Length: 250
Image (cartoon, helix red, strand yellow):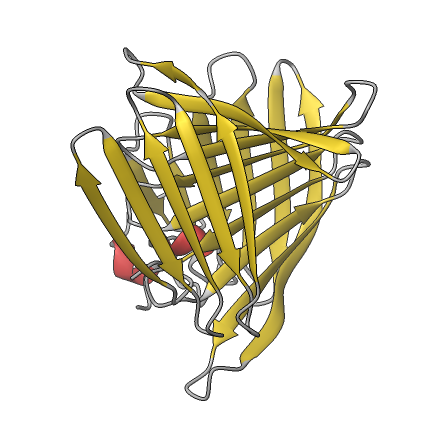
């Protein structure tokens, strides 16, 4: 089962891989890829049972084990690249003149969360992290750098509830992208990403002045407002950003 609640069935016979995704609303997608010929078909069935079939011939990169192909979407062209081992996808949408309108990547992080990142030509971006429970955290960043982090909880009856976790800003300085957030539980976060290397470090301060820092190697330390080392349990946050254990109350 996928993190969004859909049921996924994969089967490979010889060089032909078939993936069927059945969504909670009854709609489904069936994708068939022949890694020998590059032949691809995708069948989408809506909630009313109506089918739409798209077919293409992709380019196989045997070393990377990926298939890349183009599909038409109205007047636009979508170039998709799928990793046949991991299932990771990249979709680039271009208009009729070849201008890139958006790039969407779908991957899985080390915690088993599904990560969907959409970047628009304007620079605006939306990252959605879907936990194994089906809950989502959405980080929406405008072209001007304003950031809103929200959580979408999946309820027992199948409906969802959305709440804002925090707001902030992302700016570039000294070769880094620096994200600052003020969270609704009184915690503040500063996350620094080296634009060249992708290395990430972060510092969070809870409402009592305790600070949690994580360096680019993943080493985590906790100190109080006097800089004295403390236990992780003394750092208090009700918010678990990206479901990776930022807080300690869970």
